[in-house]
Image 1 (cartoon, rainbow, N blue to C red):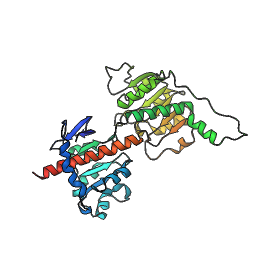
Image 2 (image 1 turned 90 degrees about the vertical axis):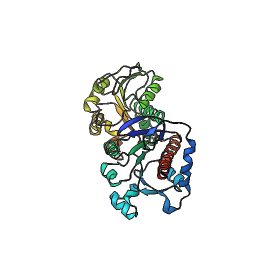
Image 3 (image 1 turned 30 degrees about the vertical axis):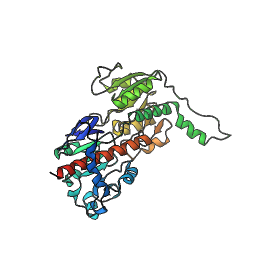
Length: 367
């Protein structure tokens, strides 16, 4: 089986491409191995006592579908539903921690070092998200644990959400919707003006796959695109800014698409927001902690920036209460990749990654 997943090996991201497991669980590029999946079918007809234990954190948004499709293959240990520490949860489930080889997760619940150390036989962590900042990759590297991102290619979906949030907050669409719902015969039309998107200067922080997709869509609005990224891209014609404050100072809009790490945490701070200015807008479809959320709330309430479209938050699922009353903010519950096609593909990728893993385990067990 050839998979198109993103793999993390010793904490290093491996570019998404067709991959298969080698015997030492390092992915290698091969072709013509469809028949190797036949051994995975042996797992499909086990009785309940022989089902492979699969520890689930989060849970992933795909989990209800994934569980229904794979209940004949795995015994799902729903750690996300327990209020107890993991070791106590496993004891209650009468599961030996050393029997667990696989975790299925998403960013809602972190996989820290103490969880990894509790599971001596853990070999693979499959996350339904594109990002892996919720997993301790350093600890995984120490224990030779593979980390697989089974996320479908959501770049287009996320880019469209970014453009949608931007159109909404600039045009005050959601604010107008709320107004209409309480509008009555005796109420005058009392709406503030929106802003047009056409011709705006848009600074994109993180010109990867998603950032590039955002740029292409905004070109249709005659927007002038510029960007900040870890490195300047020699084949990209957009102006490059190595400093986010300078990028903000030359932009009408900032769109955040970069990964979250120690270098990008709070990359959009108060200085950046003040540089963007009172008529500037921020859209975040990356990770919540890319923005200093407390400062964002203050800047929005004080009118230091024009508005914000947010699909992510610093302490999800907690959203600052102050944002709910603001008409210059549009909120979305980390739903930019919520499409039926994407869910189906992610379920398939996660199932195939696990099936390949257990197939290799079965082959090695025969030697």
